[in-house]
Amino acid sequence: MLQSQALFEKAKLYIPGGVNSPVRAFNGVGGTPVFFERAQGPFLFDEDNNRYIDYVGSWGPMILGHQDKDVLKSIEIALGKALSFGAPTRAEVLLAEFICQHIPSVDQVRMVCSGTEATMTALRLARGVTGKDMIVKFEGCYHGHSDSLLIKAGSGALTLGQPSSPGVPADFAKHTLNLEFNNSDAVYSAFAEHGDKIAAVIVEPIAGNMGCVLPNRQFLLALRQACDNHGALLIFDEVITGFRVAFGGAQSVYQVTPDITTFGKIIGGGMPVGALGGKRSIMSHLAPVGPVYQAGTLAGNPIAMAAGLATLSKLTTPGFYESIHQKTQTLVTGLSQAAKKHAIPLHINWTTGMFTLFFNDSEVNCFNDVMKSDVERFKKFFHGMLDKGIYFGPSAFESAFVSIAHTDECIAQTISSADDVFATLK
Ligand SMILES: *Cc1c(COP(=O)(O)O)cnc(C)c1O
Image (tube, rainbow, N blue to C red):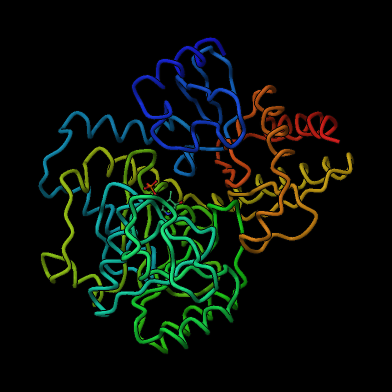
């Protein structure tokens, strides 16, 4: 860890906190962040040349594992042509066509450069289409760091939101209501009180950013119904779940249709990409067709489009999602059994390709449940696994990701390492 330590000291001189995204600083687990140098398949290699099995996958994009040959080939071809034009290209049309052909709720997409931009634009679009200002979101769901979405709940469930970060004006926060995930009654109450002002409900249809928390289908249906009854738009933020939990995303699993879907992570194959899509009648409000403004110098970047298209094309391989599902199931079953053997209270929430270990006595269905987890125990688990060459996200409240490159040996090694680490956690 000598190189990581030295680099972190230097990084702290030149970059706030030494990192370009807060969770990377290891504040959630203590210790020095690992600085990585390269990756291959399911493995990461740090600056000291230690190898780790990777369950972060760049927070989701690397569903094929690292350095997939076909993705690299596609990028190389694009590299040979141009880095950026700031003008239309064939590649962006092909990626847009691919998404529209495979996601029934999406007729058109607009490419942007990050998930944050996608959700920010989705909110502006929803406000522009409905002529209303209020947004409903859910506690523990993360949608990027734009002002309207960095909002925490006020003192009562139906009070207006408060900024969750300095720099977000209270005047902004008052347009966002923050409700409990999986609580349909809270949604009906919010619409009963504010229905005429609500432009949109935005939700992670499977939450991934408070750890993995699965929705009750009735809850998603309640969102659909409340939006329909009050002329609001339903936004599914599928930046994580899109092309991960199933080819068609969470909306195909739960059979609930949003008005707008945001994408990111997997659709960029590891390059910086986001997108929003929906019915033509909604998307046509975006400039230059309609009046809702949005633009991007590097949007639809040809290298990013090449990486995204090559990644998505491989996901159509027959049996791909069955295989990811099987790998995830084998892993979480083994981890659960190991925890049971050592009498460690553990609840694993999981779906195809993603899971979270909650060191918790009871089920985890919302943010309040998440917060009952034993964070100190997670920290010990995290460092125990890290020492054994297994890299989980450095926070108790993140999802772990499984790629198609995780072999049976990787999974077996992870389970046996966890068995050893659980033995030390009593
Ligand atoms: C990662 C994420 C975002 C933000 O995407 P960035 O590319 O980090 O800006 C938005 N929504 C969800 C659900 C995410 O997981």
